Length: 226
Image (tube, rainbow, N blue to C red; front, top):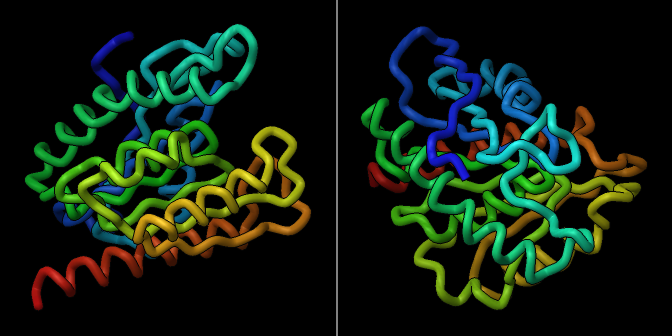
């Protein structure tokens, strides 16, 4: 597993230095060029934010043109393989996040993690284990790996999960399970069901997610100044 990640970036739309960073974590078989499109949609909502969408650390087993954060296992997705996968990939993603924050002279609380599918699994694993924790975690079409391990985490950032009720790759039950586990462990977790949407993001989910990130940054920064 390579330890140096890279991917497309967007500078703040207002032309100034970034005062917040949004890291977009793509899904299995995709790449950063896919998720950086979210940043383009949200630039006017978050004009002082920098966006970066790293490619995963491995070429994808199922799609060599794309990347993966971890392998799914020869027998397909299973809890043991995914737990091992997020544990192995977490230091690589954390190192990347640390370097991106440092390059902009930003504290870890000026971070938002946004994931899709396997990227949501990574974001929900990495974010609560960072200290300071990120301003928020937004996850699309994903799942929480190892919910029984949430008791060990040092931070509890606000979380929003968005999922299509027609998703045939990651069932919507995974979202409801994640929201329940997060709530049971003291997180503030909200959720939205995208009606008739499969494994993807619709315009409503895109708008709600962007507003959640913007509001979370505003609340985090206000709390720091209080």
